[in-house]
Every structure is written in structure tokens, then in C-alpha cells.
Amino acid sequence: MSETLTRADLSEAIYSEIGISKVESSQIVDQIFEEIILDLINGKSVKLSSFGSFLVRQKNERIGRNPKTKEEAVIEARRVVVFRASKELKNNIINE
Amino acid sequence: MIKSSLIKRLLKNNPHLIQADVESIVKIVLKNISDALSKKGRAEIRGFGTFSVRHRNARNGRNPRTGEKVVVPAKNVPMFKAGKSIRDRLNYKS
Image (cartoon, rainbow over all chains, first blue to last red; front, side, top):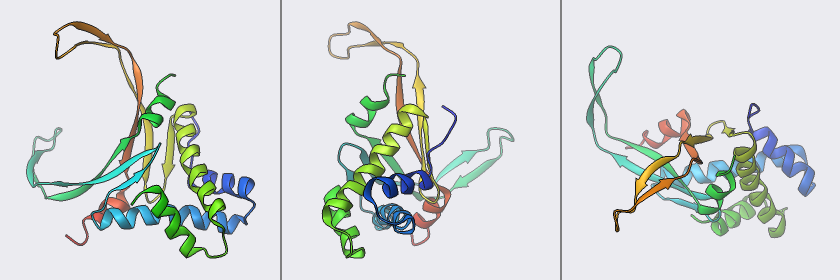
């Protein structure tokens, strides 16, 4: 549980399994995430079957408090990304 | 967007690739993230976000319909936290 998967690991996997160049592999990895981000920016949700969905939620402005200093601050209205894992993904990690 | 429309867009951007390869590529990416979560507990995609696994202890629950007590077993659940750049980009326009 120490090592973390990164973009580099993904392009490495594509490079060795598909047989396209390393440069192309890393470019397509970047494109996949960029396409997802672009749709989210446009307020569209992204559903990847057997993996999960990325949704955009609108949050209203609210007053928050710094728990340490107890100082109050306005948290502005904003959009956030939420991820809902599919059943398959949940089942894949449920057992230790 | 769904997986098939993502594949179509990638094909359009990469006319030298064939559809079967692009399908495999998307599959490899999702499979590797999923496997990394189950084996390493973490996948960090810079500029996008971080997937992690959080442990949930077993707890006593109730069947809301019957009121019956049940033990909800301990489990690991996947989490996603959007990266700073995506948060900024989402709130730039609005």
C-alpha cells in the first residue's frame, strides 16, 4: 500500500500492451483525462461504465469556520466534481 | 459523455489509431486505476485528481423497513478527490 499509480504508469501500460510509442502513449493518457475535464467544465457528467461517473455539483455560498482559529469566512458558491464509483469498482476493492 | 463517446473523440484526435486499440487503451487506463486501488490503495493523476481507498469499520445498522438489527461488515470504499487545477478550471467561468 505504499506505491502510487501515476500517469506515467498508465502510459507505460499502454506502451507495453498496445505497441504504440511512449510519446503517443503518454499523449493519449493526457487526452483521456483532458476530455473528461472539458465535459465537466461544460457541466456535463461523464459516465464510464464498470468504473464510475464523474458529476458536477453546484454548491451554494455558505459561511464556514476555520476549525482552528474559529474565524468565520464566506465560502463562495462554487462547482465541485463528485465521483460515484460503480458497483464493479466497489466490488474490486471491497476485500483487503 | 459515456465511454463510447470518449472513444469516438479520441479516435477523431488520433486518426492513425484504430478503434480496437483506442478501446483497449481506455480499458487499460480504467483497469489499471481500479487495480492500483485494490492493490496499492492509491492512484494519483496529476491535473485531474486522486483516487484512494478508505476503510470503513464494521457497524451496527438497522434494516430501515423492518427495524431489524444487522451488522454492516467492515469494507473498503473508493474515494476521489478532484485536483486543484480541475477545481480552479471548474470555477473560472462562473
